[in-house]
Length: 141
Image (cartoon, rainbow, N blue to C red):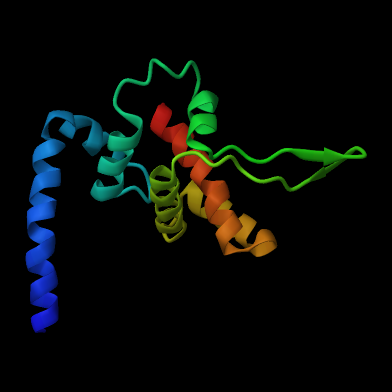
């Protein structure tokens, strides 16, 4: 219990700092919080990584490509094979995959259905990376 109290004491100032720094964009964070799987901490991280001015991205696909969450494209001899995704920001990738895992546990949402459909065939890790792409598209819109 002492260790938990110590950790809570260490986390509290950081949480307070995050709350003060996200105060100017509180409306955007609250709007992102409505996406299935995206909580307040992930929403704050998305705003920190992407920003609130999305005019530099002409379309949602440009944002997904910049974030490195586009599906890979490897074709050989007319067969489509699995390719690797782009690197993108490692912090943004971590937040989006965390949100995808959280969205997979929601009930009655498109993201959860997509995760279950893909996880049955491809595995949980690849399904989470695949669900991160629609989350980026939702963030853009």
